[in-house]
Length: 215
Image (cartoon, rainbow, N blue to C red; front, side):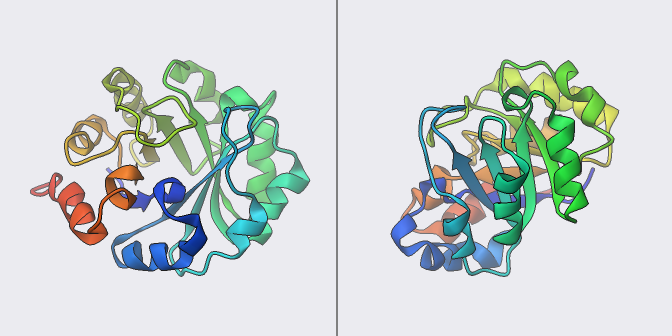
């Protein structure tokens, strides 16, 4: 099993003071998860590459594109903004292999994501191309949704197929759910409202990671 990584999601943070928000958690973070929504693939819209460019942190930026058919120049904006990894959605791209290849060609880590109802079968042909797979454990688009345990068999199957691959989960991750996802094979955990929705972010992180103790 690869190393456990925590990726606080800034979707639940205060964008008006984003660098202060990130500073509070970066000591305990392996990645900072940045959700990009276009209002087409998912109804909400969030920030763009210009916003990402303003983020000041030494923690690698894990950019999650919930975006319909992101083109090369659009993706390049996030690469130039300092993305460490970029995730595209299988459901949002006619040929995700193109986006994955473009990301890799630019020396950035590439990942592919699937929504809760999308079968793992849809991305099996990309597994040798990507550095990470993101299994959504809620429907993409909004923070604070309830963890969907029926997504766990996909994680279990994927871990059997790819013992060394980073498997990320995003949605409803909390002290109560992180262990469930870990036990099925996930090792990268995105947590938004369960960190940034709490007054004491450090205590929240310690409680989340504490659920994995003795492992």
